[in-house]
Length: 170
Picture 1 (tube, rainbow, N blue to C red):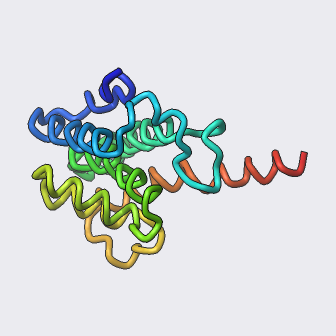
Picture 2 (picture 1 turned 90 degrees about the horizontal axis):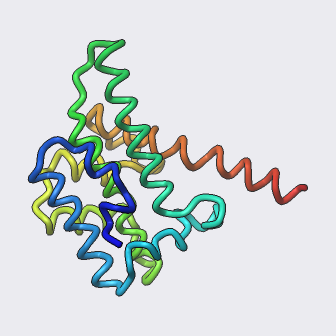
């Protein structure tokens, strides 16, 4: 199975070159880690939420879908032009570094994701969204797209922790 069959949201990126570069980042990471695309469904997106609750693929798809919705909402309701392809590329690549982090916990996934994207020739505005998508980097976010990626990612993390807490109590 190809990564594009698993994560259909790559098709939301209109700029063909950017879309192909994003796909190549994932393909290279999978190859280097000797992982089949479908095996990503057996990986949790974080250690706090088990993969049978939300796997890495579901998380990435949810973040990309939410990011696309936020971009549309900001444009239609607020008149704020969001670089939707930049935001979507960041959403699709923000956690590719999780594969590296799992193999070597000394590597922080945001940095690893940025390095992988940079190696593929991904533009700096996308690199910025990836680099600063985590909670700890709030002060360094410099674009609307980076802020929106943070919120799209966070909304698919924090509430899930509450579900886990609830399930453990039951």
